[in-house]
Amino acid sequence: MMKKGELRKQELQDKMAEHILSSGLQAISLRNLAKAAGTSDRMLLHYYQDKEELMTEVLTQISDNLITILEQAQTTPIPFNQLVPHLYLLIKEPVVKPYIQLWLELIALASKKEDPYFSIAKQIGDSFIHYCSELIQADEEEKEKLAPLTFIIVEGIAMLDAIDFDRKIGKALEGLSDFQK
Amino acid sequence: MMKKGELRKQELQDKMAEHILSSGLQAISLRNLAKAAGTSDRMLLHYYQDKEELMTEVLTQISDNLITILEQAQTTPIPFNQLVPHLYLLIKEPVVKPYIQLWLELIALASKKEDPYFSIAKQIGDSFIHYCSELIQADEEEKEKLAPLTFIIVEGIAMLDAIDFDRKIGKALEGLSDFQK
DNA sequence: TTAAAAATGTAGCACTTGCTACATAATAAA
DNA sequence: TTTATTATGTAGCAAGTGCTACATTTTTAA
Image 1 (cartoon, rainbow over the protein chains, first blue to last red):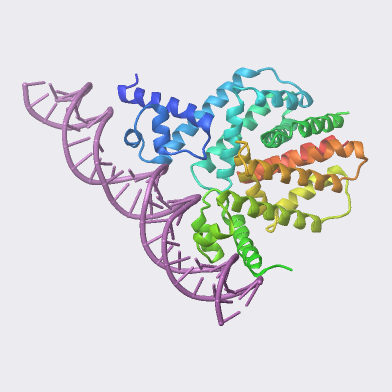
Image 2 (image 1 turned 30 degrees about the vertical axis):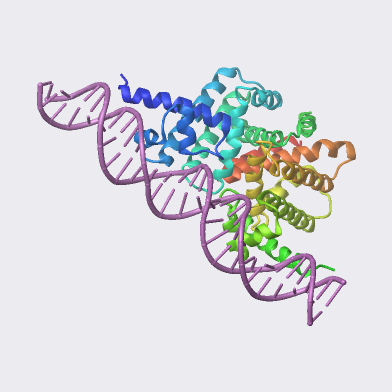
């Protein structure tokens, strides 16, 4: 059973996760997070050793939450040419979209190879490829190639989506489906 | 002819562009930029009205520089299935790589729809799709689809590259080339 | 040469950042 | 009940942020 203190910490962490999802990583500060969680920066540093530890734990939780959401969304495998459009719709959904936006920020930070962002980004990347792999209707050998390909395309789409290139995304998806013939 | 003041401004701007390319957008400050350019924050605010104006001009210049580099790299159109691997090699080149890394950061900021980042990101996006379009050996109708698709895939690759997923990129490229048969 | 304009220096303000010192109140363990 | 642990408050520090005020020198235009 959970001690009272751990319970309180989890409560704060949930609120911080929510806050980060809606406001991003860029302007995050201990005082911001504290306010969003209904406590003080002083208390955050009571529960976490420093900001890095805090971010590691909160981001890990957010990543776990995303995986949970994804796994609830679809379970039966579908062929690749249906999968990409399906995932495109998925990442546009209001529940998922904040996670994708955060993911873009995380990648930007991870590209500097600095922890905790780099490690967490790798972990999420692995999870997402694994998730794609489970969703693709194909034999193992093909999955090995198609899962990363799906990941790449969906990420690329997410980037275009970030700059409102919806029309271009549509064209690209047409181009992609032309191949499957 | 350029006035002396404008010349000095351009000189500073070149150095700031270089600095941003090597150190990213995340930790940028007027004092940092000034130091890198060999001047003071005071002088930067003499040449630019505020930080936003400065960033707009420097980022625009960086974007122009990238386009120049790209256009020097390749002029003869090649078919799509050769283009993607070619661009993969290109973005791994030391001259180009810093631009791609910066691009990832820019997208993260642009996803908040805040200027100047959003506008500049859109502009660069347009340029890159245009660049792809010129490089693809296909008729106009196909280009309309394949240029955005190329853009998406290359951006997706850049993201995987940011988290050192080189092996996965390789697999994905295999998967992609399987289609062209 | 004189007047106007541009360039540069020095200091500082008001604010935010992560984090700490020092205290007290509340709770749990003995 | 005493003791030890945990929780929470208040205040502040040192460093960094964008930006400004006020001054002075240097350059350009008349």
